[in-house]
Image (cartoon, rainbow, N blue to C red; front, side, top):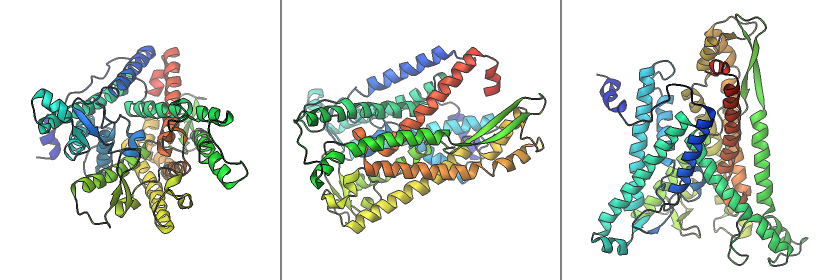
Amino acid sequence: MSWKEAAEPVLTRLPAVKRPDRHVPFKRKLGWTAGVLVLYFFLTNVGIYGLGQGEDIFGQFRTILAGEQGSLLQVGIGPIVTASIVLQLLGGANLLGLNTDENPRDQALYQGLQKTLVIVMTALTAFPMVFAGFLQPSQAVADSLGISTGALGWIMFLQIFLGGMLILYMDEVISKWGVGSGIGLFIIAGVSQRLIGGFIAWSGLDAGYVGFFPRWYGILTGQVEMGPVLTQTGLFDLFLGPGELLALITTLLIFGIVVYAESVRVEIPLSHSRVKGARGRFPVKLIYASVLPMILVRALQANIQFLGRILNNQWAGMPAVIGEYSGSEQGFAEPTGGLFYYLAPIYSPEDWMWWLGETAAAPWQIMLRVGVDLTFMIVGGGIFAIFWVETTGMGPRATAEQIQRSGMQIPGFRQNPGTTEKVLERYIPQVTVIGGALVGLLAVMANMLGTIGQVTGTGLLLTVSITYKLYEEIAEEQLMEMHPMMREMFG
């Protein structure tokens, strides 16, 4: 008996959101999407009952993993992304033996396997958060309930697990009944909230971090001190200090580069085999695999740092060569040496500008960390982009079969899937790797220069690209609403 036959009774009976059996009107799709988004914001403001003190174990990765520290959505989309990484690696190595392109049974098994992995990963993520000391139960709440803090910890664990399940099914609702994907929508929601706050947040000029515009109001009115403009101190204050001009330039530059990269494409001409004069084009974009594989790369880094913080909490005599940690103003331990330091991403200019005196590491250590981060993101971006294209039906073979089914063909070539596949292989694999590597490079450079609201370069890249694709999908939905015959062409 194969593993598919043994697992099928379980994987195909997991609770699932029913797929619509007919066309869902665009307004109703917008309604479902808006409703889930409102529910998401509501759940991020519902605290974990019984929580005393808490440390955000995800730290700077919070912008791409969504969710909110101390809320029911504590784990965010982390378990979903981690499950996707496992499936991408297993599928890339052809260990699953599933044909998700043509076999409906294998498609159902794949979806069930993914959901099972998400459930397991949610439990594996929530358990150490509570029982490794990162989220400590409140002694006062435990006493009021007449239970031990250990029992209260299990109640907290169940709340976090429930939040992870809600994220899973909210994503499924949007994917089947809404517009776009839930994962993308949650990332946009979290990053946009931080970005808007980074521009307009006003907490008082004497109360630490405030938004870009309030801070410049303070600068222009003399309430925020700045050094003389033409001196080294003045230039630092202008670009890296209170002025934050470098973060503003980086934020605007990332917006421009991503929008431009989304428009760069190689267009392969197509003609209809039966309808004379009917022509079209198949676009192979520079960022062909989108920036979503970058979530997988950063999530892999987040899991590595997750492991490091667990070891730091639980292993009192951990050797310095593995990792050294110190507290930070953000409320979570930061690696300052050892293997986990070199595997940690660069978050801000202060992490690599050693001449500013913000880091105690030697210049060669900082440059090694920058080199590891660049290599991880560029190579990882290319590899995960290939996996993403192959597992989502965007590879040369799947695309050639899709073109064949639509009745189209490449002019000058036989109407044959194999012939079309050979033509597509000249473009898709190369563009996929180049696009994935480019997105990885942009993410690291944006982190190194800093962004408004400290949303991280990856978070900003994801938000701009996902928003652009969401705009394209909304335009496509509106086109199909106005011209119902177009639905057959778009599938």
